[in-house]
Image (cartoon, rainbow, N blue to C red; front, top):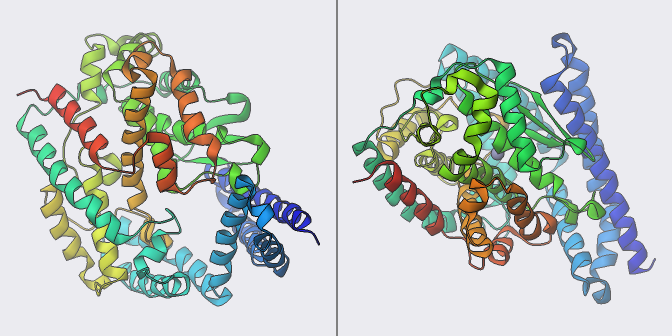
Length: 501
Ligand code: ZN
């Protein structure tokens, strides 16, 4: 078989894997949004079968043959697009083949049981119920890391590399050290100034009006409703189910800013998925780069757009029209202040822009100690509480609002948390680059010219798919390697406006 024929076969295999993956995504979406309560049993089996079929295809000898034939042909690899597809499918294939089926099965079973144990422990506020499952999970994650790790990688590095290729604990420690220092200063400065006017965050608005409002904003962002939809779920998410992208959101009667923030966040993810090249669908060039880059797109729209004074200047008339009389007595400026209250809290998912990453750093420290060090489940709560006091300056009253708050570790997601902070850093660096190249981001937002912003992201990030690794994409799109500086400058400017003096 010629190398070109092998390449065609490889792409066919990749597209079939994509069809299976998006079918799973559709079933999972349905499970979260529509599935009647009594119907979960067969759905779990459907999803397990599809996952197994996908895995079998990815590790098949046919896939290995196609890859080997492509990799031995220098002419084929001289083409940058083909080389990127071969490189990324090699990565996917190797990752899938390195884990023995017995370990994959044990992980899946433990994840499912550990999640139940976590939910029960959390609702009872009793960490002891989760403790044995966490110990078992740590042991399995270490085994998984040993299968995956390459020379020079620590166990934690090998797990993090699954979500953000190229990530190392050493690199993050350097990046996070300086970031933590200056975030702590900012936290102090914001606390010493006025707390901020949170009154708009608490106005009561019925759900129908909230929905009309957030849909209008998402429409203005350029989310394509011909190839996408918005539904409701307990926890907002975004998923690609084939040609279309599905967002979910939630509404709380007394928190319209939460609905707006989380819908803009998911719509940012959605715009990334919709901005991928259709011609590459089903191959790595038609897939998103990494979780950190994905999160940069959501945080860009949520924070750099949705929490800016310029956006509120554009959005305020729309808010008044759709939300009605609750807007009386407020102004664009007071709502901008409500959207930016800085207050250290116990819960990461409700954190403001200044303190959010301090929560992530706590998880990063703990994970390294659990995976590369000797921190075991019995000592986790006290270690958690000490780090919260040191990083965020607050006392944790109980494990429910402490180490039981996140679902991630019960799902086997170790090495995942830093992608949230990387997303914030990439977002700020992209916003600064966009500001320079478009001659002023604020003016575009003030006049509602979101299509210019979206097209810049499409040109510089979306259309590349997995052609570049995250570090390289960052360099190409912004002209510099990733740095915490643009993010810190963004926050320092904001805190100076909100808390002058
Ligand atoms: Zn996100």
